[in-house]
Amino acid sequence: MAGSEASDWLEIQVRMGCGEQAEEPFIGILEVLELGTQSDEYDDTEDEQPTWPAQVRVFKDRDRYRVESLDGRLLTIKDREFTYAFHDPETPGRSANDDECARGAHGDAIQRRPAMDWRGDDFTRPTGPPRATRFLGRDAWEIELAPPSHKPSPYVMTVDAGNGMLLEGRSVLFGPHVRWLELNVQESLPDDLFTWDGDFYQGFAGSYEDMPEDIRSHIDVENAERRTKLEELGIGPMTVGVTAMPHLHEWDDQGSFYASFDIDGLIVLLRRPHSEEPWEREPGMPLALEWSDGNWDWMLRATEEFSAEQLEGVKRSFQAAEPPNEH
Image 1 (cartoon, rainbow, N blue to C red):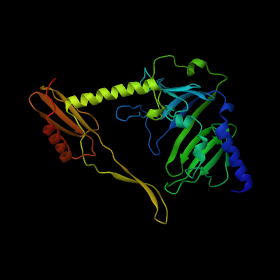
Image 2: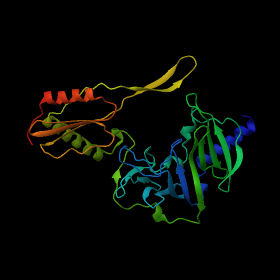
Image 3: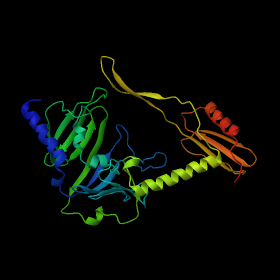
Image 4: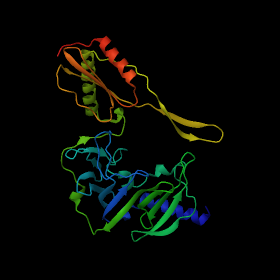
């Protein structure tokens, strides 16, 4: 870029990183899409983390925000110290705002991009000068960012010309990723929108060593109890071969590359006193084996990464181990 273009881009970066305090309080509708896909439903039935609805209502006052579904279900509250993510509608998980997990529903789109994210070449370098435009009645800049070598398409950001707020992000190839559909400026927003006085459970983004001593002690006691119970039940480690799928992350024309192998899959073992009642099925686990030893009914379930032959092998290993039959 030429000197004046580089200075324009630097000024935009500064406003994107430091302009949050210049935002006026607002209520808006935010849409966040996986590239090329969209969902209008909240789903926490299968994944460890739920799929938030694509469109949400956001109440924002500078660095504080509240996120609700369009029908009024509370999803996230972020105050100046903590973020409360309502995976459970009654009891949210609370994380300190400096934790990586302190985001909640679409927090990545609502919060400012960290300065560290502008290092390297992962959508950090404009392909040309910023272009003046308008978005939802606001003066804005449109910037196209070059992809790194292993990604197929540039990414276009539209940011507020005054405060640097991200208004829209879209892939040139795949279409919109995040965009504000409505932005209604308010004179002020009540503090109780950004306050949670109810119960919560503690969430952590850091390692075990970073947790408070009382939390670590509680985890240690639970883990010891589980190990003792596993020994009493005669359940030990198993060895099962799985197919690891390769993923190519980076490469160059000289033949260097960085790849990983994704090892996934889950096997579930259930045991109950002998009964004529059928076992309940579990979505996402298509393989199942059932048997009874007279005292106990057994079931093995497995995800699609495993074969029926592998599951039979697991069954034989448990039968050979002869776990205790005591209730």
